[in-house]
Length: 509
Ligand SMILES: [Zn+2]
Image (cartoon, rainbow, N blue to C red; front, side, top):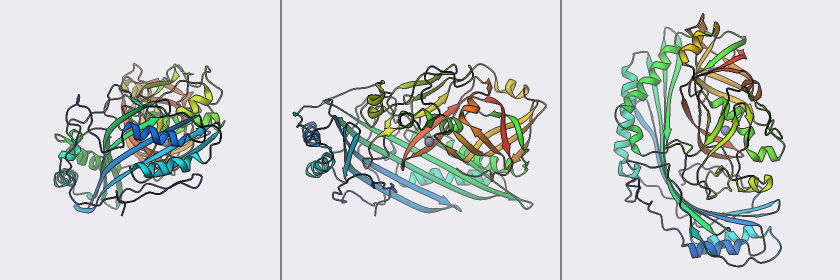
């Protein structure tokens, strides 16, 4: 039984299913290989040799095509969830396989095999090639590219046994319950993953890498005097077990519990147009309502409000927005993207002016633009497409205290909840998980049920104060049925006015 719930979206693609024997369900993962030293080259799964990869690519281009790539992956994932102080579920899975993409003009062929066996990869390549027509491509050899490394694990995940991982989670549970008797329910979701991959393409190069990621979410429900509230703590990083070192488990439990307790006394949110100060790290709004519109595939389809606006003012002068896959250890970081492009920092908006879009190989070719290392995929079962990595609004120079002090009446948005966004227009509604009134330049009562309603362009044009601090939010971005890890970061900032509705549940993810 596969433990990793990858969604299948193969309706528009040909595909080939190979042997499924690589899916394993074991109880105690403790594997020997690891990224043991920051300068040591990663150890690899038994992937096919460069010669085999070049033969598969040659098969892919046998009927013609402008470009082909081959993505081979072996991923090990552990999920543990704890509720009411007990382990609710524990899952462990290994997936292995390879995907082949061929691009010819506007056409794309994609096929995958759930196996690393060369004959099955070759069969997949033949299937993907069926859509192409034209001449035969001459064989070529592959050479490995090197690149700087931004993702390194100090303490490897696989060197920490499952029992030790569960012990971390039990510490979180105990810390949350110890905060106050009003804490009634603690739910902990934990996931770790080690993805090893090779990507080779028909320009004659291949790159390989090994990426860890750990994700932790703690949800606390509190109730007192018939009042109920929820608190959440979330952390994630492309790091090893050092992410949970020291008193991190205690801190995680306490923070989630304290947020729930603070929100027990929340009063109903005001409504109308108000200034809103967003706390550092509340940047999910910029990912959703702005970042998606700056992905070049939507721009090419003319499905983005940012299409045709390079060189034009789209925000106040205070706004500089960039996407950066080189941030050490961040959830959206990597060393090389899923198309073999080394990680980079891409300026999108500079001092309010749109300067460029995020690109993958296909869109960069169509727009005659440079590659920006935004070609990503959920797994070998999907072709890469343009995706954000760590998308950040750059800090300014004010202190957060001065921004609050300068606000007579408004809302302080400490943590965003769930929301809805139309990514073409950037129209959004976001609930606020934790928010407060600002009265006479001071943060006062917690409020519940606040909703922010507006559009990305509206918000960019109304940012009038920007802090020198910075925080980031770890999330998982969904697009066209594929999910990838991202972060979204920003300093404390003020939007001079935005519509606040008072009907949100304040929940969401
Ligand atoms: Zn997204």
